[in-house]
Length: 321
Image (cartoon, rainbow, N blue to C red; front, top):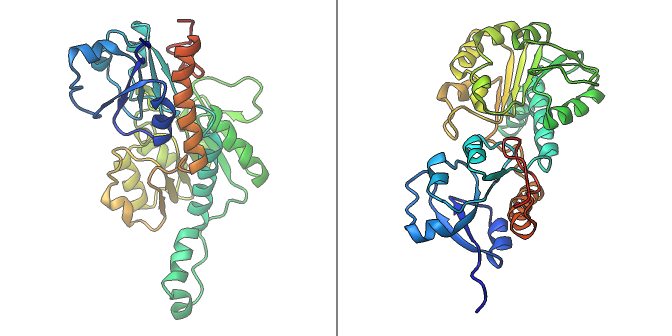
């Protein structure tokens, strides 16, 4: 008799390309996200791998005694309790690098749109107001001569910096520690950098240390000519403080691809003409999502074929099975 296929759990919605790639090689077991796992004891014992786009709790890991690897769809894996996984010898993988370019491109697009109000200008034309009211009002800001502070200088942050250089802006950064070999000015505190720059681009992960760090004090330091761009996590911005700053004119403009409670966006935030808002689409292109799906599937395939994960997260470094 042929050996039974290795059982792999699919948690919630998953990119179809992942399922198509894994389906012939593994016994895929579907489970609803964000609820009781609902697996019978025998099935739970068979699960050796998992793929997820979203959360994977410590309790679920504990319910799967044979689990070896969790492949997470996305560069951020804050929904997966990686430290608990490490304590149980479970490998967690993510999808770094393949989406760096798209996210960096989106950051630049948001910055240009926030400074020059291109979406609003297009709506002016589409609504017939160019004909009825004349030229669109002058943009209050320009990218020329700006000082951009990067909050985060990981892989994506570095790609954003590379794209900014041809725009002839000054670039600085704030991270927990200085990066060796980086020529940009380093600021040891976020507030200190906000006081020095007029443009802040946030690209930090969701951690306890980054919760609402862009608060009223930082926004005030950025100033009325300031522009805030966030392509990291909505968790990083105190949205109440941001709304208050936009309402009072304490900050000049904002471009957001991420929000604190997605997909719920504060109603008042939608009313500001100087806010450019996107529905978390930074990596949302067919080529990039396909590449992410391939990496998710290949992490599972390589783990069970060779005992080595391709892109393990730092908390759970790859090792031979």
